[in-house]
Length: 235
Image (cartoon, rainbow, N blue to C red; front, side, top):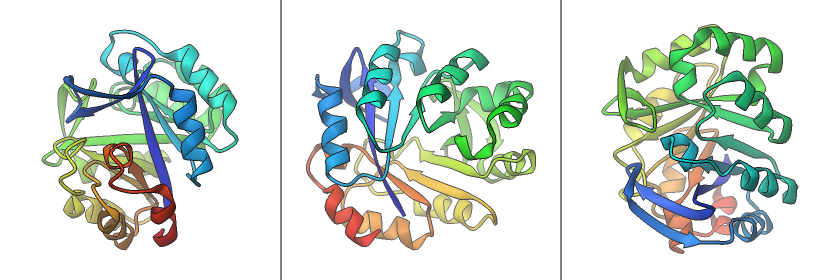
């Protein structure tokens, strides 16, 4: 299982939100490159790099994103506000993979073109949900799409890697949503990255036992409740 630290950017700083709410923001560092190098040195398999300002439509950290990727030798998956073909192409020119959420649900035509141009191994579909219903637009809009049906629909198109976040667990340290994670991991042919609620090493073990492909470490990592090194030992 891949151990994947998250670096969420707002106004050039490393932050964590609770349930995606900007007003519930904690700033952990104003040196994102230093943090990225620290996680790399600790043995992270890859970095999950999120431009929250772009996600929320209130700004951009794109130059910083490029600088972070340039400084690292491990893969980086870039997420946040990638809602048109040009932005996605630019991101794929520097990063190993992109994570697509809103666009994946609102523009299947562009999605299929990206699949044709770049292949399915460089595009991760973000299936963020509240009570099993997928949400988009920075988690502000409920699509009404059932999580499992949504995953199966993207499988049929040709995608297989998914980032699964239970919004109500994100940033809460309340433990992962194992019920929906297990359902998703049981879908044949998928690689599921689990995100949201990880609070300790036992949570990582439970995620592994669901046969997840990877796990995102966020708040627990920044608050020293878990170490990358110990997560790697059980992964």
